[in-house]
Length: 192
Image 1 (cartoon, rainbow, N blue to C red):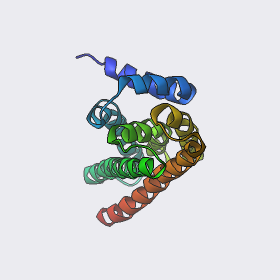
Image 2 (cartoon, one colour; image 1 turned 135 degrees about the horizontal axis):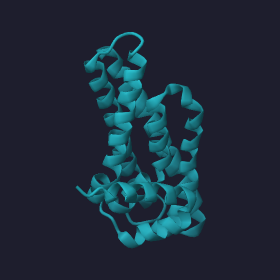
Image 3 (cartoon, rainbow, N blue to C red; image 1 turned 180 degrees about the vertical axis):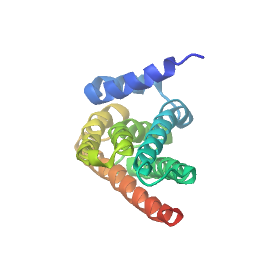
Image 4 (cartoon, one colour; image 1 turned 45 degrees about the horizontal axis):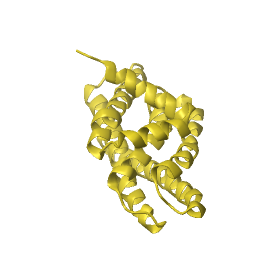
């Protein structure tokens, strides 16, 4: 089995964080559809986050007793939180594109949301292992920087509106992620 796709995902994550301006140009040239983004990039990262949250939960349960049902619930909670929040964010950012003078394009909105959300996903992976790593949650704010560099490359918006679009979109992504995570976590607490 060929696992080169894992290396490509890791390289993309590193490059979008370390060199966002250059990486956005590559992303634009690839012209990835929302289907390919989910299948080839987002879902593998979400799977890693699900596994780390299940590992973290099993470590926490080692003190009180192992329960496989709790592990499955934790994995489902993590999967739903990430998938639902990014899907809603894509739909809203697509509408924001039109609001700021661009042409709605779900694929471009998906590229902006998913690649800008790499810091959120990485934080989710870390926090899944141990909630004591919460200080790394501040890294999620890097979404602003990545999106700021992606907007002028991916969208043909008037220059004076690009920074406002970037800020509002990044805030939308973060707020929706936090809100959806809170709602789903609260709902899933009834299963524990």
